[in-house]
Amino acid sequence: MSIDQQSSVEDQNLEREMVNVRRANFKSFWDKYSDKPDTNSMMLNHSAEELEASDRADILASLPQLHNKDVVDIGAGIGRFTTVLAETARWVLSTDFIDSFIKKNQQRNAHLGNINYRVGDAVGLQMDSNSVDLVFTNWLMMYLSDEETVEFIFNCMRWLRESGIVHLRESCSEPSTGRSKAKSMHDTANANPTHYRFSSLYINLLRAIRYRDVDNKLWRFNVQWSCSVPTYIKRSNNWRQVHWLAEKVQAEDGAKETSFNELVELLKTTWQQGQEAWDAKLDDEKYVWSEKIFSSAIASLPSNSTFFLYTPRTISPFCHINAHSLAETFNANVWNTEIVPEYYRTSLTKSNNLKDQRVRFGWNETLASSVKYWQQKEALFDVFIATEFLSTSDDNTIRQVPQITSSGAKFFTLEPVDEVNEDAMKERLQKLGFTLESFTDVTDQAVAAQEQYFKDHEHLSNEKVIRKNWVLLELSATN
Image (cartoon, rainbow, N blue to C red):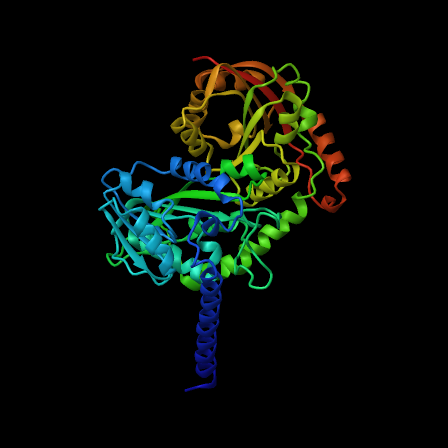
């Protein structure tokens, strides 16, 4: 054996030893609660009973229909989700690696005959390929190392049938109790061995994986959405309890299989460092430069409305909308769709700092995906405000947006354009089902606002002002 080969073997043995230590620490932590298998222990929160029913309802409401579906509930604990899953699904496998938790689970679900139980580690769980329609987890990957997290996502892909769904929910950046020590059941003597990863890392991992099965078919996840769990916003002012829904679909033409090592490096280093860099730029943002452009146009909007904001930030990460300012000015309930995972994470940070429960942020890969999400909820918004709405959306998506707005809804968008041409814009909008109510060339104001913004944020002095033509549009839907 060469020196290089011997070194490689030693590295692999060391990594296995480290994994075993981590798993032992993890089991030791949860063993503290094995003699009291209750809701407080499951949620690591002394106030869990106040949260449990509402939190469970939030999560279950986000799942697809499970009639005639097979489900695995991983990290099921005492079965707080297993019960409801089994009441609608054809079959459920409920797993946890603490024996007393599974025994409690069996006791509370003894009346249901379609549940199998298994004691074992989530990472080592053995199931047949293409055997389930839903992989359900609630607080799991934050207890796994980066390597184990990647391995688990590969396993999810393998276990799921085509069009199968994975639901993930994690504490991101901080515990479910936020920074409150009074509510938390974490202790410093035997610390919770938890990775409070950035929410963007999970989105990026789900989007990046390309898995080749035994039949040589290549698969990916279509990440349908990411959003905060409402109960934790209402009860704990915590926007960082985040969950995701992703569907197993065939990979796009030309896609290449991703390796385990590649994804581990991305998760452990590349995406982490990328998020930290954006945090340094955006976390201390004092205001948003577009406020100066929108303010007069929207001044007459009624109070107590519901606002839908769309901020793709394609032209610049600093071109977005101040959701919190709108909520304060109009006493409005505001939903802001972000499409870049890293900017979504910074928006959650701002929400946690400002604690305005009227403001919510969601991530979708496209505006069309966000519209579909709200159509499923049968929601209607009174006001639609966007940046780059027309320049980043296809015609079909633009036509769909009025389907999530109320009759008489107001539409505003700030657009970078190559040419300031009102007639051409009016003609295009008419074809898309909109009437152009006002068209304002705001190029000078937009450039000046950006220049002042970068002066007021000294750490961004090297960022570039977008010196394009800018127009502000007010629209109404014709249908």
